[in-house]
View (cartoon, helix red, strand yellow):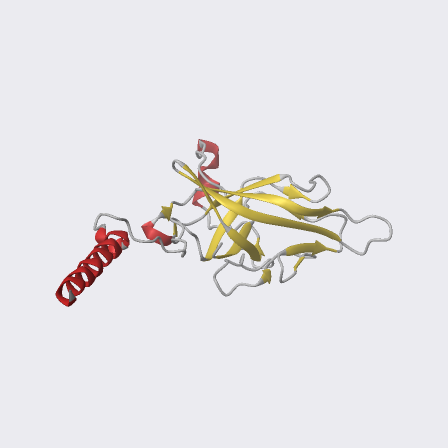
Length: 215
C-alpha cells in the first residue's frame, strides 16, 4: 500500500511539472520578445545651427498670424542617420506674431516659427528658434552684362575706390546672436523681431541663423 501511494504521488508531481512547462513562455521558442517602450530616434532629425535666406521679403504690416514664410538653405545641412539636406532646400515657417506700430504702441513686432524642411520624397519637421539675422551679403552685386565699344575707354580706366562708408556685410556663424548690420531692429532671446519703426521688414535674401533642437 505504501509503495502504491508513493507511485501515485510521483505521477501527480510529474503531471504538474509538465503543465507548468507548457504554460511557460520558454516553451514557445518562436514567440517574439516584449517590445521596448523607448521610441527610436527620428530619421533625419536636425539639431544644431544652420543658416538660410528668405526667398521673399516679409513685412509685419502685411502679414498675419499663420501666414507662411519661405526660405532656403545656403549650405548643406547634415542631420541624423546620414541624412543630408542639400543647399537650396526649402525651409517653411509660419507667422506666430505680426504687429505694425500704431497709436499707443512703442514698437512693431514679427515672430516666425520655422518648423519644417522640404526634402526629396517628403518633409522633415524641425523645432527651431531664430538666433541671429543679417542683411543679404550679395545685395548690390552686379553680375554679367556685355561691354559696348563706346565703353571701352571707361572699362580700361582705373576702377573706382571701394565704398567703405557702409562697412562689410556681416556673415552669420554659430556664435552670431541678435541683429547684425540692420538698423533699428532688435531680436529677443525667444526669436521675436522688434522695431521702433512702423513695421518690421526684412528684404528678400536676408540671412537667418536658426538654432534647431530635438523634437
